[in-house]
Amino acid sequence: MCNSKPPSKLVMLMALLSLSFLLCYGVEKVHCSTVHENNQDFHSLLDFKKGITNDSNGAMSNWTNNTHFCQWNGVKCTLTPPYRVTELNLTGNDLAGRISTSLGNLTYLSLLALPNNRFSGPIPPINKLQNLSVRLLYLYL
Ligand SMILES: *[C@@H]1O[C@H](CO)[C@@H](O)[C@H](O)[C@H]1NC(C)=O
Ligand SMILES: *[C@@H]1O[C@H](CO)[C@@H](O)[C@H](O)[C@H]1NC(C)=O
Ligand SMILES: *[C@@H]1O[C@H](CO)[C@@H](O)[C@H](O)[C@H]1NC(C)=O
Ligand SMILES: *[C@@H]1O[C@H](CO)[C@@H](O)[C@H](O)[C@H]1NC(C)=O
Ligand SMILES: *[C@@H]1O[C@H](CO)[C@@H](O)[C@H](O)[C@H]1NC(C)=O
Ligand SMILES: *[C@@H]1O[C@H](CO)[C@@H](O)[C@H](O)[C@H]1NC(C)=O
Image (cartoon, rainbow, N blue to C red; front, side):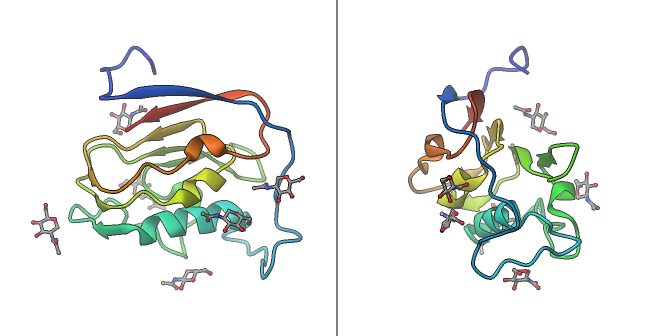
């Protein structure tokens, strides 16, 4: 991915964190539905969507509750259960709004690409990802 067109900003962050999984247990009112078996990532993405104030291209039109979040536009997940979000790429969709700090809870994220949108406000502390083993996070903002 590094030999594609250079992004406006590329930050590689090493996240050195302990390995532990937050699954569908022990979390407040979590129910493990068939569609959204990982509530943590589902809710993190939903919260991100709530921060979007204008999606004039309909880039997030299939970000709905009856579609698995791994099939939402721009989202890629691990290939095996528990399905966790590994990539969020909404490049060039003219999205307006703010970038939710909930992205910091996508603990399997290794690529976040959001250039060529109209986000405003601060970039949340995505580097404060918790509970991961050593890995790289590619940020294109
Ligand atoms: C990270 O791990 C700690 C201790 O195991 C736990 O209390 C916390 O809820 C975990 N956070 C996430 C986001 O998985
Ligand atoms: C949303 O964005 C489109 C494209 O930039 C713009 O034409 C439209 O006026 C915007 N709508 C609102 C409510 O800001
Ligand atoms: C989707 O699910 C979330 C969490 O379960 C809920 O807060 C939201 O209202 C639901 N949205 C729709 C359109 O049903
Ligand atoms: C959601 O939209 C994207 C982009 O149009 C598409 O690739 C994906 O298959 C769609 N997902 C579903 C479940 O239709
Ligand atoms: C993001 O998605 C776009 C469109 O699908 C693609 O052209 C681009 O290479 C992707 N960016 C990254 C960093 O993977
Ligand atoms: C991240 O996850 C934790 C544990 O589930 C939750 O308490 C917190 O509100 C989440 N943070 C955001 C910004 O969504």
